[in-house]
Length: 367
Image (tube, rainbow, N blue to C red):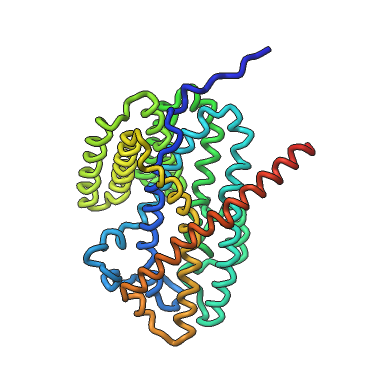
């Protein structure tokens, strides 16, 4: 009789990382700032640069309007950290990995994809062009269903545009799933080599930059978890390391063509500083962060459909889109998107997950 392998040494005693959960909500809100400019884009079949200074409270919130897109890279790094925490020590990980991914991602993705196809059709009928994402053809719709729309054969973002990052992250999941036996033997070495290698190729101008960077960030996030397992990352070291990376990020940003390198430094500065907060929270004061973080996925996928619905309403009533320059409109839009995230998680995502797992259980029973 063979003894099941013991992977308990590959999991930190901390069950949840509440500051990381909370940071996911804040990252989703950063994406809202970045995409707010869409409202001002007129119905034209090409890219338009918006004067971001016209957006509400720009003098105070300009950094978020200009750099909110870097939250996507942070999502990838946090995912790598969390996946290492959840799956490295789970002996049944290979069997339950993909059912869990399907249950978590696809129901809301498919719903918002269908809604965006409908809303884009209404916008096209009214204006003769699409809203922001112009490659809404049958090819990209079919590729979007299995989240394969951004693997290198796309012309551009399509339908519910932010789902492009989910498409690349699916490939990170696949590499993680395949590399799991090796990661269990040498988690830090394997994750660090994969992460730094892929990001180095990306920075050097390698092909399919978005996929390379996604998988790279994901595995460097896993490497951060492995380093924490070894005791190398503790609040006493994370704080100075995080602050040093902040300084490096700003220094790189000041240089020509150093934006991607600055994003790498800034992403892991944020991860390390957030992790320092988590590891210092022995009494669980940030426990509320878990429920707040649950809304991040819904916010991320709902905010563009909500935005397009508002634009359709504004245009149909003959109002000027300059209404979005008013602070109250910004607050209204953010409230709608964040509320949708919480309602979506409680009323749609969780029930859909249970339904998928029930179907999976019945299929396994028959098999």
